[in-house]
Image (cartoon, rainbow, N blue to C red; front, side, top):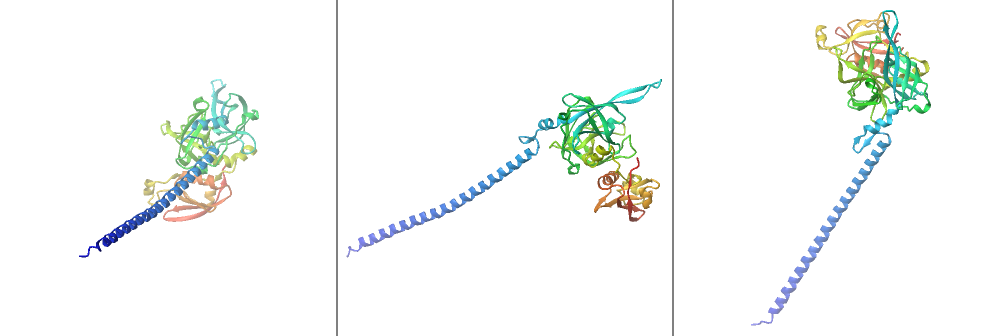
Amino acid sequence: MDFSQKPKATRFSAILLVTAVLVSLFAAVLGYSLGYSVITDKISDLQNQISTLQEKILNLQSTQNIKNENNTYFLGENISLSQLYEHVKDSVVVVQGVIVEGYDFWGRPIYSGVQGSGFVSNLTGQFVIITNYHVVQSAFNITVTFTDGDAYEANVTGSDLYADLAVLSAQAPQYEYKPLKIISSSTLKVGDPVIAVGTPLGLSGSMTSGIVSALGRTVSVSWSNYAIADCIQTTAPINPGNSGGPLLNYQGEVVGITSYTAITSQGVAAQGLGLAIPSSTILREIEALVKNGSYDSHPWLGISGTDMNFEMAQSMNTNITYGVLIAQITSGGPADKAGLQKDDIIIGINATSITARIRGMDDLSTFLEEYTSPNQTINVIIVRGSKTITLPVTLGRRPT
């Protein structure tokens, strides 16, 4: 036998084994390198994503800082009402006066004190104090008291009983006047937070808070045959003495004038249901009140009516359950001249490219006050019997 060939075979097998091991090691190293490369790429992607998130966070923080610079009062994640109060309190005043409440048996006058609130404005380049008309109605010996306790004589220089607005001038030094910014109440939405600052029940410097609970309310008042239109309804508590004070947003801007507490049919004050004159009314009237002492541009349709409902629709044999049912038309007034009739149902108005669905007197009064003016021709959409008719009506100026 030839045993000399066996070692060669063994060496060849060893070489093959070493080669296989080296190949395996190379494959492992190659696989590791490829895997490492993939993992490195993923880590790089994650780092890029983290950098992007950090940049977004910085942008959000910058935006928050901008909001703070615009005087939204934050404390951490919460609104700081105390800082907001400090910002506005020196602009709110106590308004006091005297009225003749009646006469005794011998005809001597019986005097009574009145009290409300007001706030400083500089919309026209002249410092004035804005308050409600009903606060100073028929009052004399009027004074305004600032937060430092200093009181000064004041006079009514302009008023509008239809909007329940009055403007006062006071014999106060200029340093006392710290005007509030007034913005349009058209920016308000139901649910927006608001605060009221004033003198409820004689407690000066009081602040209450709440939300806007409704918009476009109409309020009937004792001193006028015409309702106050477009009022703001709020849950911020309003009590006697609050009248004339500012209703503010969380930037410290005036959006209304706190004016009334809703009263039930039993004469009881409703809880959590206050009403305010909208700041859009101030912006519309302030220049005339300061310069002329009055405002005479309220539009006039010349009707009285009531809100439609399901029961009324059934009794009238109509399927119209919304709108204003005309109960009375003023002879010779705009509606009379345009051909509107008693028992017509007003369901819409078109004016200056705005068409509004009229659901009731709130909508009608608010639309006329906000979007129309005397001598303007509007299209009134009515239902008369089974027909829908559009009539052009030229509005008048509300009689004084």
